[in-house]
Amino acid sequence: MPDAPLGIAVVDKEAGFTSHDVVAQGRRVFGTRKVGHSGTLDPGATGVLLLGVGRATRLLRFLTDLPKTYTTTVVLGTETDTLDDSGTVTATHDMTGISPSRIAEVAAGFIGDILQVPPMVSAVKIDGKRLHQLAREGIEVDRPARPVTVHALEVSAIDEAGGTFRIAVTCSSGTYVRTLAADIGAALGGGAHLRDLRRTAIGSFTEAEAAPIDEAVLLSPAEGLRDYPAVTVAGEAAKAVGHGKVLERVELGVVGVGPWRVLDDSGDLLAVYESRGNERVKPAVVLTG
Image (cartoon, rainbow, N blue to C red):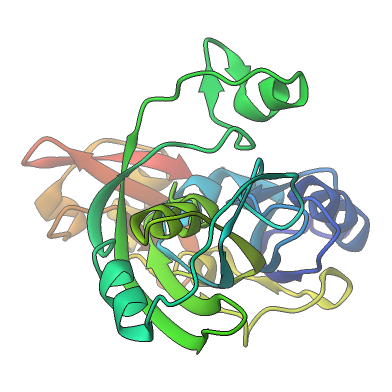
């Protein structure tokens, strides 16, 4: 009997498919029902989507936490109810005459720790109901602002006549680029929406490594968590990790805040460990057994 499929796939999602659609396709490609994704992409967006297959679905939360990079076009002067070009226009503004230097200056003000109000088309839950469900019912509710971090934001290809410019954004998990585009438009004295959103990277996984779902290959769990520090164990320590024991930091040989990949002497991932206080570490996921 063949081994069950196990690993992480770096997929280049096409426009027109939901992330759930890609998961369904992945189940067919990899021959298992046990497939999940890390970090939802809107149907109209394209780019890097990470799939966990088999027991590697248990690792997806660590991939979700990685920073993400996007490119998109910001369209000045028009607001929509979805904050992108798929929605209905809700307001227009005359934003002619805004200089490229002013656009760059305002955009730079969004770099760092900022607060964002989640869009109504997001999957955030308010009182137990997802915002996009409320939006489909024509209901808009107050949403508390959430802290996010924009690590980098570059402006390029400014078209003054067309009222558009391109941005490349690297940001923390949970950042809404559509909200960022709308907020930049508001800060410029009007409004904006985005189009052609593409995720070009999740952590170290870039679009150059991504493939259409039908051509995707599985990386090992150890390679799938390559953005996290690793420690190799053998003998009794490996047995203890395999049994999911809480260990002293010195026993595991780790430093820093974690989490850590714990590998056996063949380079296979045994577990992921996290801090438990200052002196001990605990298993977050154990893949063996």
